[in-house]
Image (cartoon, rainbow, N blue to C red; front, side):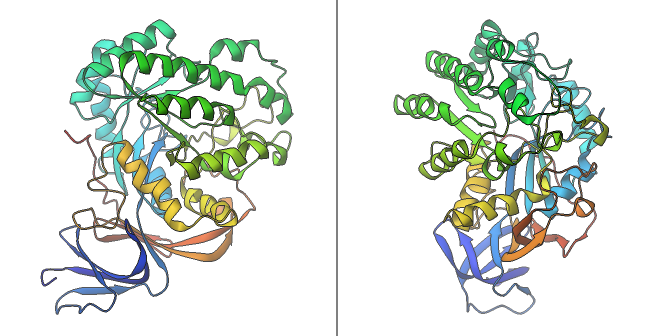
Length: 446
């Protein structure tokens, strides 16, 4: 420990082996050791003793729409990464759509990287996009370092990012499987959506009926069939339908390479509580009923659902009209995701170790960063969040860091206050005060 530049000490450190009192040493931005709590601090090292606050690995959010460049009035790298840092997130992976241009060619990726380079408060990686006409661009994007490819199986809501039909999915997935890549999928079937009642207006019940569970279930069934045939690696984005869980369990049992995520809003909010006209709750697929939510939690506990990510998808406030049919669909949740998930998890008897597994270790592993992110262990980046898990706060939109302060959590009392966030051994947020951007741009490990 003689070369340690920084020493962090807590009575509760969440490590891969469990939670314990420990002393964590850091040098050159990496964790060098996790030692007993009373380990000697060498001369010349800076000690940060956080007392009984919990030291946990910085969260890794692999589903974020930053919208920069092109729709920066919706969000942007500066504001999104500040919100993430305020919530204990130290790494995010940006989705390829809602920015202009979308990340569907290497040239477009370079545009986005140039915009992000000096604005990122945390580490940022990028997904590529799979469109009907860009199969030729997939391998070059893979070689340029994107972490995988996003595809929609129903209209995305962005004209510049059209969805794939089954033949187009087949071609894209075959190409991606050929170089060992990952396809991540918005799985709703367009035919089931078209057949569902489309009333429009302010009633949440009408919106929920317009995005039925069988749209998800059918799309996931078809995706499993394609992945099985091609032995391809696929990931289901923002699962909301509990009816799809048996399909996923059966596919895994027969060796299909499929992983699954869900989101804090599906785990903490229910259809029964959404007021009519409150489109800050609108997302696709939708927030469903409480009984459905219970089954999602059970699937997290048994490992059918691998991880929890935000799907942070903001817009300007004027796009959140009181008509659920026309309002922009997306929940803004970066800053609140840890606290929201922890609030519900603790009420259901889960621990912070579970939350860290779902929101840090598993997400890091999904994108191939498990050797350096998502754990307090020697050799990993010294990315930390310091959390007061029993403290509460009431969500005030004015205190949020994302650009447009629209939130479905307004007025809710949440457990878990992030006291500070650390990126590669440097404190980037402390009691609401931010440093200048220190994030780096990440590429998929080769």
